[in-house]
Length: 275
Image (cartoon, rainbow, N blue to C red):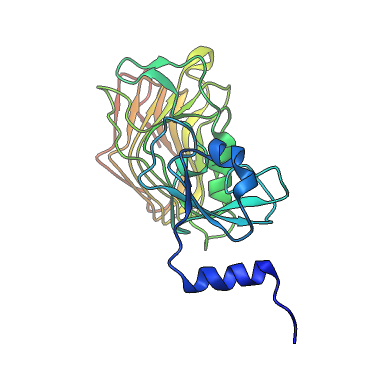
């Protein structure tokens, strides 16, 4: 006979009973109340950050997993809160992204206190999730969704690309460099890739490097030196737009079966399509 510990008894009780999770408004309030949490507890947080809505509450399990500040939260008492999430699609605000690029979306006024979301997007990419990015996010450097494995497809989906009458779902950059790079099997849709600030009209907005079997649709590149640069095999670009860039799209001569449907250039300084 081996006596059962309190921890084992608690786990058995939770397995047999309808369990009502403890609930907090934010991750910060969960951390502040860590003293009442125990291993294997199930926790709900209405949002990650105060004032940023989620489509449904985040659910965490109390574990001893190694914290990363996004998928696994350090509770400061030797325990962690591990996000229980859909492994296929991830609403990027669930792991702490702040869609605060603009202080006014319609006018495009940039928020001087904007949050750098690069590490959050990189963490979602590392999990192999389809990233759902429905707000306007600032990233301090290139978002590299490249992957040497054709079995792991990079996907990022916005809610709307408003093109000329506003900004919609936006990835905003102000560094002296490129925007978003894809590799094999990429999917991206309904996004504005936006270069602003002192480094406007530098870099390439959308790079599809060695991208085969890609499906890129309704992407607007605004404010770049070149809107897009592609070396692709059997890829489809639908409704992609170069707007207010120095140059439009370049299709490299060694591209094979890259199909551009309904793509166009507006108000760019020089070339529209280079082949």
